[in-house]
Length: 193
Image (cartoon, rainbow, N blue to C red; front, side):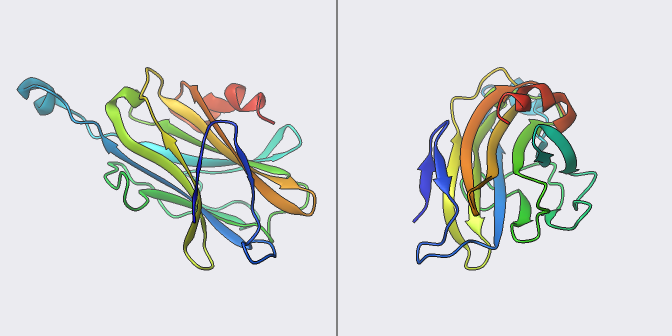
């Protein structure tokens, strides 16, 4: 059973029957918000949200996975590909990032997941946006964080997966930010390391 996470909430990434998860998938889904009026519908642009994963050793970024670099240098983190229009909303994922937790290099202690509007629309123009974590081994949704309330920002620092003792934990961050790429979000990420 999935946990609906709220901002700042943390969960342990252990299987319900005990043991650690090996591969998790961070999924992102969204839809364009309905636009009112004939002219608004005629001039609406497709919304291209992008999921990124920034790998950190302490407070230093050491690698990134995003639409222009689909696999981390060591192969432990992999983006499944860029979706430029969304549409899954509360259904399936529009973009996914797979993390093989057992292969993540020892010096990497946290992975920050971000989402940004590459086309520049604000989240006020996005509906049914979510970020979720799935146990890739059995397809079970472990946690879901819903982007609610829209807003005049173009990005969000969504969540982080970080080492916790001998295992991993996930924390929902949900901090609004502005930027079209993960590089624009590095100052906002810094306060969550």
